[in-house]
Image (cartoon, rainbow, N blue to C red; front, top):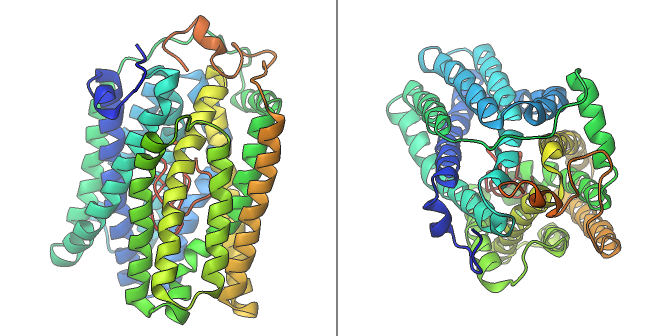
Length: 452
């Protein structure tokens, strides 16, 4: 089934990938509308930036609390059923804000519930993709989903803000509820291949521990985890404080808009470059290399006082974010055994959000005591360290190794018996992937712009 030159149009002609792509794209449209409208609502109701920060906390906590359980369930249950269940639950939750959107506590509770749904949806979607495309098509398939997410961010956010201001919050929240319903309807027609590896443990938490032990045996996964954590410790603060940097030295509010747009431009052209100019994009180099480029960009931002220079640097940041995110997801999908993928993606989500939370807390204190320049200097050094750690591990990992006690080896080993089987975030500045990972989209949480 795999062609020498896989392309997105060819993949979209296949019903299974088309359904998955449509479901994730429609869901992303609603997510962007929800995120934009919720921020405007909380500013309106609470009158403070701290009120908006509460929504970020409500988004992070479910990942930290539920990711181990979610990963286990994704590896135990049919993944399409997990995604449909998460979508239906989020239809009901999003519907609450359609009719009751004048209370901050209600908004926080709904944001918490929607994030709980995403904790289950994201690893299921990322783990399912290798079941609907061939191993050699994963980069193209992930690029298609990434590009759709970036496009949704660019087009939908201004429309959602306009609807909220001109028509009312209820209409914008209804858009999100409808998106989850459409996603669930589309996914119901997606037939998932049966998994033949039986689950040996009964407790989901014992299952999660079993998966962690198996994943720890993969040297490349350990390197990706270290890089992920270091990148999250960098991006959490630098993302949130980009507006402060713009206000201090790069043109204020208008400069901030230019910087965010520059990241979006880079994120949009990244997959095009990855697919057309690089002969073998699914290599560790294209995960860890972008860390170094993003680290250099942060060091430039630490000293830049010229808006065009900063914007040009952020175009490169967005470009490296998208290439790194697509490669990151594709590496996990191809090198982690099928029966461990859900726990792998959920674990990386938890790792990312842990680093992001610590970074948000520490970055604010650092900015207040030493200034915004110190935040970007430290962020750049953390990313350069992630690149160094990863490149050393990539050199040491010269061939796939078998994971004892799992179905097959990482790499294409399990394709011998499962021909149909084979999105996190490498530290960019989108919202939390799955995903991504980048100052751009990577699962539902990947949104271009600095990580929120």
